[in-house]
Amino acid sequence: MHASLRAGGYDPIVADDVEAVREAFARDSIPAVILGAQGNDERVLEILRAVRAGASRRAYVTLLTEDCPEEFLAAAYDAGADADLGAAHGHTLIVARLAAAERYRRRLAGSVQFDPPLSALERVAFGSTWRRASRTLEDATAMFLSLPARCVETIASEPLTTMATQILLSSTQEQLEVRIAVATDIVSARNMAVHMYGPDNEDLALDMLGELANIFMGSMKSVFGASAHAFTGGLPAPIDVEQVLRPLETYKHQETFALVVERARLIVHLGIRAKANTFVLSTGLREGMVLKHDVYNPRGILVINAGTRLSANMVTKLSTLLPATRAVEVMAS
Image (cartoon, rainbow, N blue to C red; front, side, top):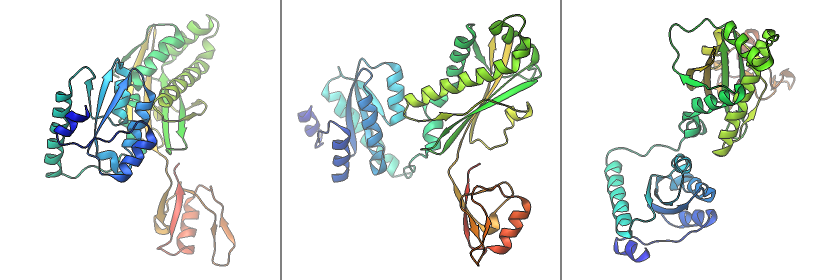
């Protein structure tokens, strides 16, 4: 292959692990990468993520695949692959593909600028794990209830939901929060409780809904972990039914769907948001914001403790105490 690449005007560099890839990109501006992949090779995904870090994210990455399952290829594209070719293809086609990619890059560079690197929120929300979340929860429902389950769109004539619960997943490393809210009507809840716990246990309907939310959390946590996004799960908590589709927090990416099982129907709302701390001017503080650090007056006396959720009176107090140009770090809430 080296001879074919050189004949095509390329000067190939061999790098067979993550550190070698990083060193190669640190030394040179590399326009294209050819990466061999066989089966479910996690090392390939690790190298892809290394290639996409920093300035090297502009390189065009082609996978030469052999016996790679569809799930692996989807993960590879999420990690940064641009194209794939079967390893059985000849070197002439590989060089032609690289040349076509270079022509496209030149046209693109002449018209628009390259996008900035994706944020942690965008990497998760645009990935296959988030796109397939409804299918993941459909499978989890079927396994938990031992009944066939179908994911369908919500409709205007949905039964009136009478109970709801939510559970949160958090990523400390990526400063992200995922919310799973589940709601159902009383008849559906009782039918599922009876199915799970027996005919004398209709009163366990809310407990059953909380357990289902817990199952959903575990399923999403597992699939996120498989795509290198580490989340920890909280505990299910009952919420007002109005909050299912109108959460108290603002979630950048949201999805709502219904899950249908025998004699029952569930409404599910998924949301994901960034939780990174932000800085605001003292004049921009608002009721409900949470302080990251202690606040002292000019004499060094503690006025408000870190972690305090600001009331309207506290906001007024700080606006008179702090200079208007003072930046205050507030925690995501």
